[in-house]
Image (tube, rainbow, N blue to C red; front, side):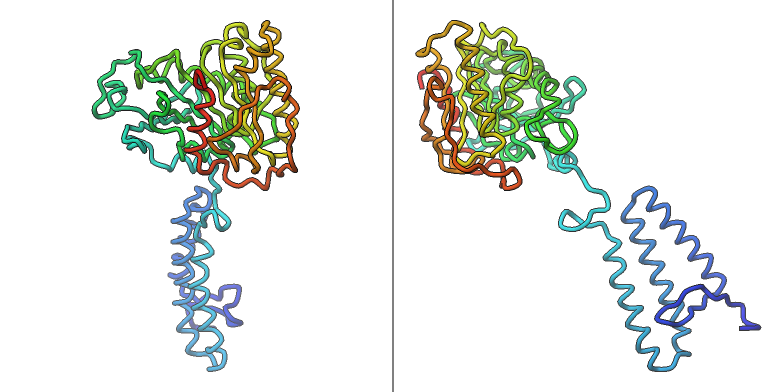
Length: 407
């Protein structure tokens, strides 16, 4: 258009060339630069603003052109611009898990958004939820007990203990299953059977005990020993700075992937330091994956119970009996007879349920002697799993009773 200080933007809006004044060009260039920076720096809110405002400016500057259009083309163009303004900001917005995320968060990152701090347990006692670094690994843990049992350094109101003090209560330390649900459910909170509850979150991107990065890979736990070492150091070195407890009365409970790390790595490498207590392995078990250290110190005085169900995961059905046999053999090698082994090592898979479903406190205990070859029904596939733990408070309470002396 000769004589007019306008330039023609390459492209069309609803079939019509859009004309802009030179000042508008500078504004659009700045907005384009702003949008590019937002993308490079991954700032969703800034990207959303720049894109939305650019579209608004495009639509606004097109309006004076619209008045020159024939009425039928104007009718087509106006709805198009309005829909463009309404739809584009929505599509540019970062979406949560239900949609495609601009930056997918790992389960570990999602867990970090769950507040920690001090809260009240189901029995009215105190829960401390905090994070420490052990051997370079971030370990978030919860510990539940009477306020007076906590140390002054813990920050718990009513704390009276000093770091390193011995208390009357023991510990029940829980390692959750893959995904970490039972850490947040904290089914072993409160004081149960004379034990304060402890739950520890796996130092893993996917919240997998024994695997720091990547998706679950069957029964493989490449970081099992590192995680087992961190668990040992947390209980031995860190928890005494937080609460007073009986260090000779520390039990361990594993759920699914937590059971794999306990049976495959922690028990063979470190259970000699926690002898005379017990280990509850729920819906998971591995033969020792590392050398067994000091078996003679714990195998003859430590209770080990394997708990499963009839419809256990298919990949665990052969693994659990192998673990049962391996630990029985450790006892045989230590010179224990069948009766002694039967008092210490028990197994059950009678509940008619799937992976960690159908368990109850009224579980039937069987000695491992003569019951090494468990009979399962048709197993679940791993992708058929629901939540790792449900109605877990009753189940873990009943499970710990299996390990207590005289029961």
